[in-house]
Image 1 (cartoon, rainbow, N blue to C red):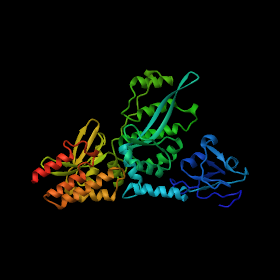
Image 2 (tube, rainbow, N blue to C red):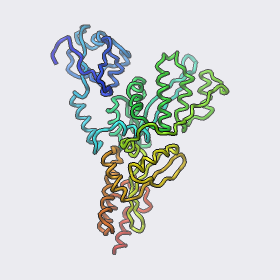
Image 3 (cartoon, rainbow, N blue to C red):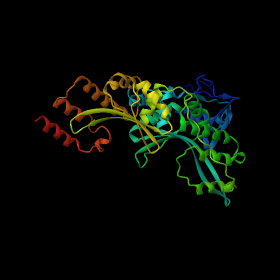
Image 4 (spheres, rainbow, N blue to C red):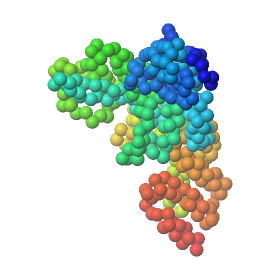
Length: 423
């Protein structure tokens, strides 16, 4: 980069804009947008990459003002050279690392992310009671969130890079990690367009539609927002909530609404599928709330199985399981869940394994799948297992889920059963 006072704009492109539209308007830059897209900014006479501090600058600022803040010679005519982040070799290396960690397939597909959201994601709105000059008020924080086990953090990092926005939490007490997008600009310009193009379904779609309305209402200045409607939308987003009726009444009372004047919550009436259910979407669901496991019986039978959990109101997913996996499987209900189970080696060999190989999963569950697949292939080639094959399968798969903690007998005890049976 030459040492000069004037630079031209290059590659001011959002990865989320398929038309590659420039982010320049009237010779000014929306700093919020630039920062959230993780663009890197190079300034006159600076040799290193840096980013602007939005807290000190504000949401929108002219090129002239930026140059005054960041140019070493303080020349107002200095222009910034904003470079596509992928031109940074360090970012290229990071991207490749995440690809490698994701395993087969390497890159996340949009429908996969929506399927994973259907299983392990949520759209919600936090409500905080604030106090200023002895007056109580409400603060709203709409957000999109995906929660995975800490062993699958790389997937959340890849999702963060896919959207180029959001934050990833530190490990929670339960061993999970959260990916969260709560910035209004990101929700409006990135997250909402994604889920309009690649929709979630049923209760998740209901919550998403309410999130869209909340984000729209929060575009108004603070004093002009319809807080009563925002509160109603926020409370209506998720059926399962820790908020008691008394607490809800209290929140409305802060806004001056008596309990007998509170409008009913907005019901979730979505009970049809209006968008395509793609293989990538199903793979995302499996990566979230599905499982691959091996049953070892006392009679020394080895039985592969797979399971998928989903909401009780989501039974319309089941024809798609039959479409992609060849059988409707067994269905049972527990609390608010439906659980679909399949135990059929022929279907695993002819339908499930080809499907999963063509539509890979990316969380730590991918390691379970690869072990499960190997077991299926071994069982398919041996009609009667030898002692050596049984021992191999036990060493391979006995402790693959939760380190075998849910087994009624330990791995060593099971190996003893095998030895006793053959000797």
